[in-house]
Image 1 (tube, rainbow, N blue to C red):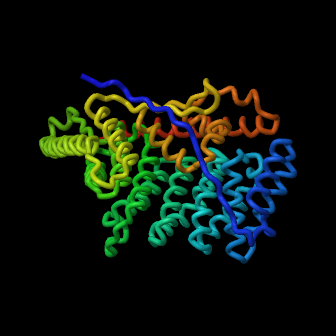
Image 2: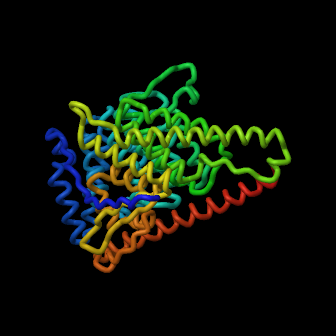
Image 3: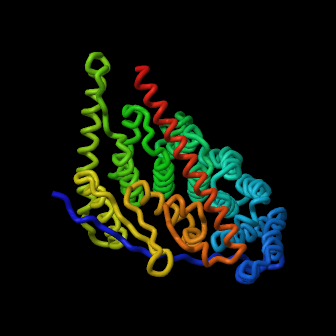
Length: 437
C-alpha cells in the first residue's frame, strides 16, 4: 500500500556581494555600478549598458589582482541580476578568454569568481554554437584544476562550472561522458588516471562532485550502457550513504535515486541469453548483484530516514536528511515520484517538478544561480524550456527585454531538440548493438 505524495512549495532568496573600496576607481562601487546598469537597463539605453559592462571588461586586463577580482564580482552580479544575452552575444569570446586567464593565473578568490562567471555566461548565451565553444574552450582548464587538487573552494567552483557548461553546451553524449569521467575521478580517485597517488577528497568537495555528476547524469535520458558498467559506480555511491558528513550522504542519496529512476540497476534478459549458457550465467550473477545492491540501498535509506538526532545535532539538516531519504524510500518501494513547486511570480506562475531528474536539475541550478535564480526562471528562455515553464512574461516586457526573452526561448528550444535528437540516435544505436549481439 502506497503513501500520500509529498509536495513542497519554496521561495527563492539571496544575498549581496561586496568589493574592496580600494578598487572603486577602477570599476566603481558595487551599488553604484549595478545601479547604473539597472537604470540603463530599465530605460533601454543599450549603449549605456555596454559602457558599464565595458568598464568591467577593461578592468580584467589590469595587472592588479584585486582590481580583476572586483571586476569579476561586478560581472557575476550583473549576470545574476539581468538577462544580458543581447549585450554579451558578440563579446562572449573575449569574456571567456579573460575568465580562463583568471582561472589559470589568478588567486583562489579570482579563480572561483571566474569559474562562476563562465557558468553564468553559458546560461546567458543559451544552447547553440556559442555555448558549445564556451564548453570546449573552458573544459581543459577546468579539468586541470580537478586534476591538481588545489584549494577546496577552487575545486568546488570548477566542478559547478564544468557541470553547467556541459549541461548547456555539450553537442553529443561523448562530450558529456568526458565531463562525467572528470567528476568521477574526483569522487573515486582510485578509478581515475592518477592511480599511483592516493587522494581522498574533503567532504565539501566530495558532496559537490557527486552533486555535479548527478546533475549531468540527468541529461542521458533513457540511454544506458549495459548494466554491468554501472555496477561499480552504484556500489561505490551506496558506500557514501554511510559517510560521516551529512551533505555527502544526501548527495549520494539523490544520485542513487536518479540511478533507480533511469533503471540503471535493472538487468534485462533476452532470448539469446537463454540460448547462450555463458552469457546467461554472467547476467544471472549480475542480476543477483544488482538485487543485493537494491536491498542494501533500501535498508540504508530506511535507516537514514529515521536517524536519531543526538545531542548537538543540527536539527534543520537532520530534518532535511530524513525527508530526503523518506522520499527516496517511497520511490524505491512504491514508485512514488518526488514533487516540488517553486513560486515564480504572483499566484499563477509556478515551476513544478515531479521526477528525480527534474528535482536534481532544479536544486543544482537554484543553488548555482543563487539570488539570480528567480530572475532567470522568469526571463531566461533556456531555463523555461528546461523546466517546461509556460508564462505570459513576454507580453509584459519592454521591447529590448522581448528580444532577449525570445532569443532565449529559441535557444532553449534548440537545446531540447538537440538532446531529443541525440537520445533518439543513442536508442537506435543501442538497438543495433543488441541485434549484433
